[in-house]
Length: 529
Image (cartoon, rainbow, N blue to C red):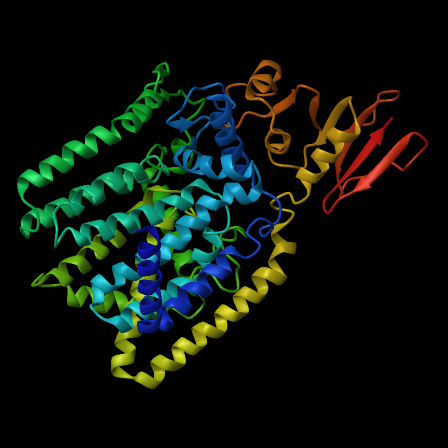
């Protein structure tokens, strides 16, 4: 029976490839670009990757995060918080492969691959055309924002793909109302993925529910059941937000903990709590327009400036696609038009989000899937009106893709390596092995203590019992020392057997008798015996 099922599956895959070779090939190209060297490009680790990876490891093996919180629904992390969903989803990979850069990035990789498939399915619902499906797979496979997002472990990378899956579920609910519960569950889950969901999700689910009720796609009873389910699933994160806004004590249960942060991070990235909301909102929207037109936000981990979020020629296609989609969905005469309205609602609420957020690409990442859908819409219209121009456009996008991949794999590692503190892990591991004494770690690393926790797999209880903070209670608590590790500007202590980790750009002591020096890409270890 098992062999027969396996044969049927293989036969189905073969028929799918035979009937849609371009679709399969485009997916494979996109998959290879996302998988290739994922453990080493970007080289090193961003501090947020190390943070969420270590907390996932600590909860998995010890039941607490590095702040001693049992099964937190939201991580305290540096003090101001880090969303926890990515950490929990990372645990199976950490259990299988250990705590490594690759295992921590696996969630981003898998959601990226899944996002490609769901994006194709959503496009088929929107445009009712096999050609549009192939165009959608082409654009999502080669998209630079999506490629870069799929290759590193920032917790906010989960959010846009969760919204995409939710949109697919609501589109399926037009045929079967049971899919609406998938829509509700995924949206509630996304509240645990990133802070911008607190604004986006309630508006989105309410607006879509009104549309579906008004157009009699779903009955009132189904809407109410979904509403109750959403409230139930969202209640813990709602309690977390209120607890921290009102500065109450943490709530601990055997199943989860609602922690108290030192300073909620949402206050720092949102202008809702700003003294001058109108001025801040105007500045935020200007930043968004700048990113929309230029394609990048100046942060090398979010985009490569020459290519932006969708290549330099994308903006005219986005605007063209928006006009076409708005015109097509004006009368709401059929299900396809209603599905297009859902995408427009998605885009509109994402634009509203830019007014209340200190804008960069990862903070407004929920906007990019609908923007890429607009590119697909614009290209399909162009193919119908001027096929030759459409073909030339596809070729130009393809050329940009080849250029992007060349730069990403050849030049980008040199650019991003210092920003991701390449080789700090090697230096820490080497220093910890070479000396039984203290390890002095340079402060030319953002939150250097997290890299020690990550690469040395420190027991969180040992960290909690020995940690000293220079600014306890701060939004970003700086660790001065824990255990045998000391952080700051390393100075040789005469007569002390110890290891010192220097940044290569700083003055490094000359080698003397009783001293060994080991150089790595960006850091040097000096060991005194």
